[in-house]
Length: 480
Image (cartoon, rainbow, N blue to C red):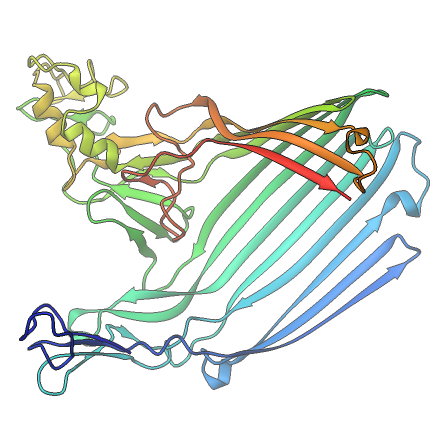
């Protein structure tokens, strides 16, 4: 419990709780809960080539009702080393296939079974305020079921390798809130529901193209595709706004659609997809955040890494790539509304024409369908669609595609003779640089990989974020 004298004191500089007309006090006992668990595992091997792994865990969570407090989640994994089980061509150094099935449970946060109340100071005895979220006395654990199949193969004395993985995960009975009618006495209700599926493919290729006594070159490539879909939410609420902000966008989860769709204000269009321009020469747009402006999910990701070594010198680098996805920028919207972006310098004399000078990929038409010919000033245009309070989010969405040099390392192994009789087996000095620069970036102003936080709605949005950092370091590694 914490208390303070509030904003005003009766006697200046006399710090006592009774020296104020409005003491403030808060009490937070913490989130008290318990989870008891039992875990078991077993591994069965056959001919040192076939392995079966079995695990089982049972949890009892205090945050669930007594009838649903216990939940069990097992896993099975089977791996077969083909190169140890049978004779393969001499070019095959190693071959393994694998498959796993796993189930994972998750209990809700505390205090969802009873309606809680918060105490605040005031009046003679203080105030109690009931929580706006109705409890659910029949909650049960969230469950994630995953299935994975893969293959690991290496060739030519491990000079070439492939690691391929197919996977699918389903998270069911997710825990979320639904809105209630105003007359119900509460604003939200906590429920179980939903089935979100992720499935995809991952591939890693490793290689050593050159290997001699003094020189070695390793080259690796990775590629991944993930597709997600909200198979089911709730019969009462097939569309859920899980986050966002008051000004720019809503982060929406919709039944039958991918997870990660952004909605905002958008241009009003005719049946041919052309933007309808008003008589004043400004594009018209929706009043509500009702237009789908993009999906944060990339089409695919990948990268390459390579390492070179010559005698005691070595160098390596890593390049990463993200293809597709979107990011919205409230920063750009506000700067545009204030005339601080480069684009806002066009047409300041009143000659700006939508679709010709700005947003050249759009076609502007009047309400009757004829081409728009009305010009406006840059100030009127950007203050109309930009600014902080009600920007047209569709106008400030950028492609998140980018390729960057993620890391570069230059190293040198110092000879042991330098250290004489000291008990040193190896010393390596390295110069390391990370997040060095973009090789390609679709957005001119944004770092598409910036994350505003750890919440579900943090991706795909930027608002006056600090610049991402480029780092340099010197690393000294000593082995004894």
